[in-house]
Length: 627
Ligand code: ADP
Image (cartoon, rainbow, N blue to C red; front, side, top):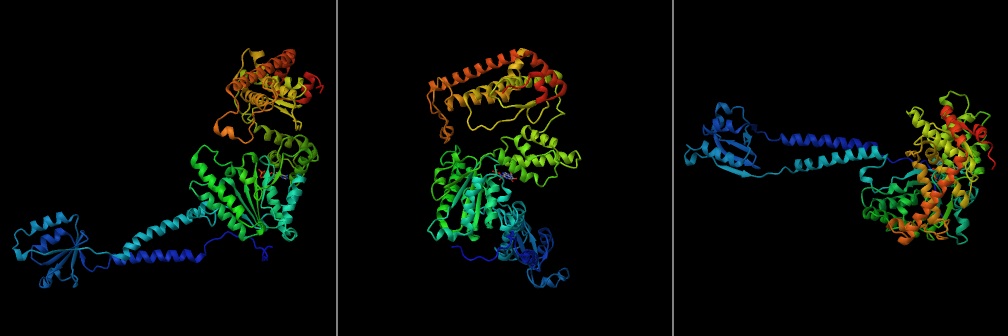
């Protein structure tokens, strides 16, 4: 059972009480005054060795000299001599004068010379003493330390936010939201109905633990959210906290690790400590793969040690607290396969919730959430937008909606219309248009033929996604682009793979046919083709010679040790088969383009004239696509 709780107050950052700063300032001022007073407490008059030698010593007025700490000499004047007029204003208390010397040896030599004509009884006795001024010594040590401490506190607080300083590096930089500060609920998470049902159970655990504990059931401690970046993992965790109305402690995996060894473990301890104090609560660790990788894998021993100890501490903490304390640890990753098995075993992160990229229906729902705050033109519908954005994550959709609104605002429109969304989608897929990039006419011609080549091959082959438009306006890193509307496939067949490789090679083959030589513009295409070919041959069992064998290693063990799970002979066979596959695809692509040679010229010319060619115009040149 949870302890009875007071009504929750917003959690405020802790700052030192305002009075403490003043106490510190007063202390420094008093200390400085103290030092000045102490240094001035000697009543004797400052003079120099030259003066003493040429006057007092010469007239036999000096009774004795006392050398203190080998640097200051006190001059004691004879009582009789004090009556002389030149000593009228000297202090009555001995020593009457002091002066500084550079070195005792030089002083002694000089003194001997000055007394060379003195008789033995006339010679002045010299004594030596060492004195300590403890108070000023201590102050001189302590004060700088205090000042440094205070400066560190201030800069630390300034850099890391309230309550954090350089002396707090063992503390976690946890972001803490009170329940008032996590207003996200399941209403804000569109789609993902199955995932929501599962996390709903966690909300029930947090809200009504007695329903479970009275039956003897243990509340799960760890929930792992797995999904590609931007698929709404953080949003889902926040929604759980918001629904359950409990504090939410959020930290990213990389924030545990600092340059100091041992900090990670200490931060884990601190995080759990804070969460337990506020139980029931949720700890959310984003990108847990940063610290949760399988141990003993990384190549750098130092980094490995620190990460291992952080992970060990996390495991210890998760084992350490009682299942019914009311702290639930949620973690997010997009690489569940590389996590240490110890992290995933029962009693730790044993619940896995998968958040895939949204399908079309889910995209409609996500668009509805993000379109709500926008002022829309009647031409915009979430159905249509969802159909234009296959493969987009929730974050991409949120970004498109915001981008469209920004574009509309830039063009001073009164509402966001369809064209703004088109532009925003294009921008999200391929980056910003770089219309000002200087491209020579001959280069432009190469780019036009390259894109026309992609377009014609994609148009003619059955298993390539339908084309929407083609453009030779440079965007992001690419100089031109063909836009497809990907269909959602769960399984890809051999013929689909082959056609896609041909479509990717279309640009390079067109260049070779038209200009008789290839250019450097096909780097991305060739990289994609090569990776795809290796995937097919070595991993997917899609090559006759290699057979139905897969050398895929989901645990990443071979990658880390630079080993291969096959012999040298197999490696050579894989290389040969990959080359054969690419060459066959190349020949097939060439055949398609040679059969459409005239269309290639027409399309390239149209691209040079208009820069962007839409599907309707493509149909005029190439005829309607039959599949
Ligand atoms: P992740 O943690 O998986 O990388 P986030 O949770 O940070 O992704 O998601 C980023 C943003 O994407 C969210 O703030 C939200 O605006 C949007 N988003 C993602 N998924 C959804 C969804 N299912 N419904 C509504 N918005 C979503």
